[in-house]
Amino acid sequence: MRGKNRGVISGQHALQERGHWGSKVEFLLAVAGNMVGLGNVWRFPYLCYKNGGGAFLVPYLVFVVTCGVPLFLLETSVGQHTQEGSVTCWRKLCPLAEGIGYGGLLILLYDCMTYIMILSWALLYLVFSFTATLPWSTCDNYWNTADCVMTTLRNHTNHTKGTSSTIEFWERRVLKISEGIEEIGSIRWEVLLCLLTMWVLCYFCVWKGVKSTGKVVYFTATFPYVMLLILLIRGLTLPGARQGVEFYLLPELSRLSDPQVWMDAGSQIFFSYSIGTGTLAVLGSYNTQNNNCYKDSFWLCSLNSCTSMVAGFAVFSVLGFMAHEQGVPIAEVAESGLGLAFIAYPLAMAMMPWPQVWSVCFFVMLILLGLDTQFVCIEVVMTSISDIFPKVMRQAGKREWFLLLFCLTCFFLQLVMITEGGMYFFQIFDYYACNGACILFLCVFESLAIGWIFGAERLCGIIADMTGKRANAYFKICWRFLTPFVSLGSFVYFLVEYKPLTFNRRYLFPTWAHVMGWMMALSSILLVPGWALYKLITTKGTLRQRLHRLCWPEGPDRSQDPKRDTVLQHITEEDPVEI
Image (cartoon, rainbow, N blue to C red):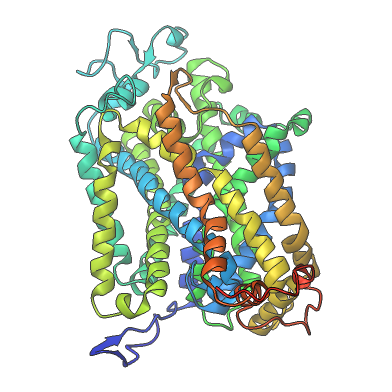
């Protein structure tokens, strides 16, 4: 990070400089590390096979060009232009839309509490990977039941009559899961230690801001690719790998008529591209203003999608091997999410020669993929809060103390998730608070605020000033029409097709749990209209004056976009009341 203390005095305290990335490489690695995460490995491959194989790439690419890349460029360029966090950047662009920043910040807070739980479980599996016999590969452990089946046996055809040893290890040893959310039970102390370890790692990755984050990503953003390459080569050399890859990519064009296929493609783009929450705006704000964010956006989006494709080959080659060894169809072993990470893949590694080696490789890759996503999320939260309260947070030592308070608060709030009933609370957070519908809602208003109020033409001019290259006119069409239309359509479809959360397809959550989930989901959504209403009420002047101040704090630039403020033309001219 460039720059030293600015020597700006607030009382008797010198405020520290906000700073920039030490180099362009740090920015690229930080964004790549944040984007390329667990969803690329365990979600995209499963969605691809589930939704028509190669045919899934059609809706996937449609969402890439209509939402993914346009919003990625929008957020990165906005952050670079304003040099502000995810909330305060809107004060310079459109204060009326500042609630978008607060909503995204709240989603990141929920993400920080759920994502790190996955890393804690992965760390526990990594520790068990150093044992002489992988504990999930046998049925002679104290946690196993009489129904336990060692599904590592070749061509075992009676595996459906019992419970897999990997499932019993996950549910009875790691989670010790209770019968329902009402039975919280005791704390899982091993998971507690793993969770504490992950928070300590994240703290020291972030405690000096981009000065420390920019250095850590050199390892955390690159080493997972080494592990992924090793697992890919190993997977493709296993018997049955070819059948797995064919199953992954075999096109089924009839699936394109299913709206759910398009919804899955859209949700994958919004999650994996890290759009809607302000993350890209914060990371872009540490660039110098002459950085070519236009070219960076294309390269980083391409890297993300290519990584997802390559991960699919690594995952399904191994799943093909599993199906070959067990003599079952691939569809019976294909999993996504937690099922892939902690049941299917550990089982596959137990079937290989030197299972401990491959288990260590997989869980190290999993931890590093998630770690940089986690600490970048924390950095985004810290930067955004620091920019909201700069006179306090930029005093020497204040950031470190606040970061410690933030980590401890999240840690203690998570204690309920590491109990025997903790998985049920984790599912509620993941399904409601961190779901795609909340992000879709924010993206609708983000594109409308920039495309119609701030001005798509104006943003293109800013990009040209920063990069020396004018953005393609297609992006103006996206920001004004395509992106908000596609995002809104996806959001409405999600609401229409909403299904109450279940666990393991059989456990039904009580009503109060769904109410709690919807309250968390609405907490981020309602911040957008709520903040706009608050600003309209508290800003002084006539209604027309208030709208002008809240929509164009720097004044409307009619020379570039003369029709941009037509939204005010029908407001009554006579509004003498001041508030």
